[in-house]
Image (cartoon, rainbow, N blue to C red; front, top):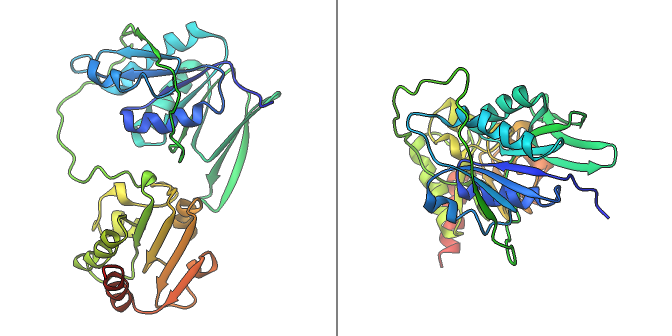
Length: 312
């Protein structure tokens, strides 16, 4: 019989991420509770995702997400002497995780790819050295905080409705001051949920050529992702589409990497892909060491040909 923690808390800043995190949390805890900041309509979407209790915090005017941490800490401490806190491995999730770790005197591990609970403690595996290796750490503190990607499995069939309890807002000792809010340009794509992805690498000569990858993605009913240089170096695609150690981890059935060399930082993000296809004119590209199918050739010829064939 699997060893379980008595209690796991989950925090996510939207219900889409919450469903995947709860799927992971149910593997590790006897009881799984949610810490959620949102309006009444958003809370209704939380109650059938598999949690036992949803602690609902009504949004406070001018209060940023990080300043709810003292409120979360109060509930976690009152609930028991030992617990795991699980958050999405986003920038905001990691910022909140750091604050939780400081206030709970808890171990914090980011970008966890595997977690197991045993009689002698919690063990978390995560990439280090830029994804060149994985390390497993034993978390010895009574409270532990981890960030990770969503589980690929998000079924909530048969999940009982959670009870909803109001959360009391505890003002932080040193609140952040909200100066202004501005809409962030870019898409709302979640590549972690995509079943088919076409990857764009430095083999593309200019931004307009990404239309070739988009056409292929449309033909296979998939999404377009990219390597880090495309998003953060060239700025041709938004950060949400960056696949790699500090970007998105795919759980796709199919990944077609076009013009991607296959550096380890990128390949960490595709370890969970079922079928990996690479298109590259360099027969010695590192990615060919990891693929199920490889095509050595010019992506400017191969992508249109594949798209045309699939559209027949």
